[in-house]
Image (cartoon, rainbow, N blue to C red; front, side, top):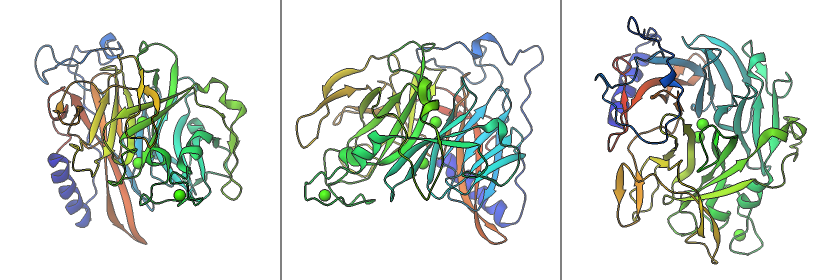
Length: 415
Ligand SMILES: [Ca+2]
Ligand SMILES: [Ca+2]
Ligand SMILES: [Ca+2]
């Protein structure tokens, strides 16, 4: 996305010059407007074209145009979620969870994670944050559950302070460790191998939402997306894979995190498993997000490398389309599964029959539910003891335009 790249350079230049990058002031609703009108919470099942400034356009944003998540001695920002009820933003910084308010003031952090904390989402039923957490060398894959209401100081420990529990996902281990070429050797954490079923590299994108094809207000499920290694030499890695879990009985599985002795407490089976044909990507779904505004599912990826595919950075699953049974094409042996459909809008590639959009949401993509979205950006900035990773979110508005369906909200571009 060129706009974001230009902005990235500006911010990097500011940071290099030692200038503080302050949070933009909160956008105010116009006089007489009610920011929390009923239309902001009504689920919509179809895409709506909205003119940014027209009479039929969305309400003025009640969200800051920009929030800075701080700079941390970690890897890059992996996902963000806004706690609308309490006015907080949660940030996954790979080895750390950060809690800020909507002005970017840091409320607390959960630190000391040596694995890979990826995308996160908030469970509206219990107010806790759920994120994907990988320990590939130990062949352990978890959903980390953080009791964010108790995160109230910087430097809380993921193992010691009792705010983080984990549930193990056996299904991921099964596919990650599959010895696909049957040579008796599992090649481990590398994409340069025929091993790993479906090319599974682990898990990253997570989101709560209704089951695919179900009504928006039906029971919320936890959807967990596979990472998928980039590999142009095989044909069995051209799908995104989504696991569905009903987490109502997960309390009995929850255990404290122990990195020294990884536990295996979790559901033995998935409630459903879905496949979406997009072409191979680089590490699968980075950010998965159910979008109440359109009723569809957003999937932000690092684009794939196979020349025969268009390699879009953003896909949308048609949330209104019932999944269907069909062949999971490209597998070593004929295999059937439950297939999802791409929303037939945006850019279309006839040769592969795939649809997609231009937008980089790979570091974080949050649907606020009222036609507004946060997209995350991150970069390395110098710190006193070495480089830090800074994360921030910018406000966007849904337009549904092709090829880029989001417009930056005026001002969020000018930090
Ligand atoms: Ca092998
Ligand atoms: Ca990621
Ligand atoms: Ca998410």
